[in-house]
Image (cartoon, rainbow, N blue to C red; front, side):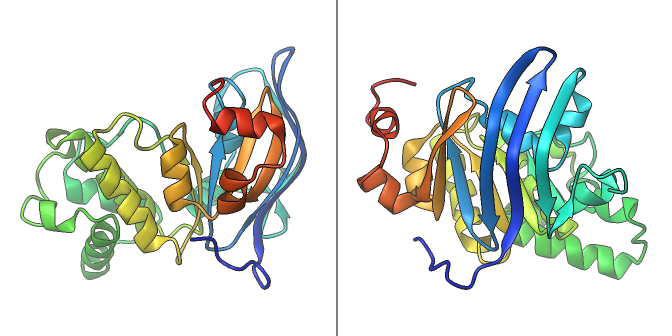
Length: 258
């Protein structure tokens, strides 16, 4: 499904990104760029730095004590670690979906409208419209349209995850970060999440951490392979999976470790 990248714009660029927890350096100088309206998969064994790197892209690592980030991360050519960066605004533009569904203990409607209301949207018609559009984009509208006032926690895990996706989509981000969003779900729910990503990938830049090689192959345009805090290989997914350049990549894709 790789798209030609001849005229694509880099939405996020990262240059020599190093991240340390206390004295432990978890990432050793990552250079990686993400292009507009593409899905990029981050793969690698547990503990290789995928999630650490992902969290740095919208400064979620700010919430972890004793974390140091060096190097440069730019979003639309603006340094996101600049003192002038509005982190709340940054996270509206670069949304995030986590491994475990985490809906608020509120109704479906209030979950999806939450970020909009926080942004100052009060017009009921506009809220209704955005909630419906976002739930449709997340492929959950038909399942919840008659239960919008029902507590989001009363739905299945897969439904909760898609409600959370609608909550992210409602504020119309430019980038969506996803940290193993289907690992806690059953195969049917996972497939629905993948279908959702395929249906919206022309509208958003999506970066997804996954341990599922088949998932990466199915949905991503490009794949980055990380190992022990280093970026080993980055290429179009089809090229990497058919003919990886590095022996370590080949060994990982063939299940020799990980």
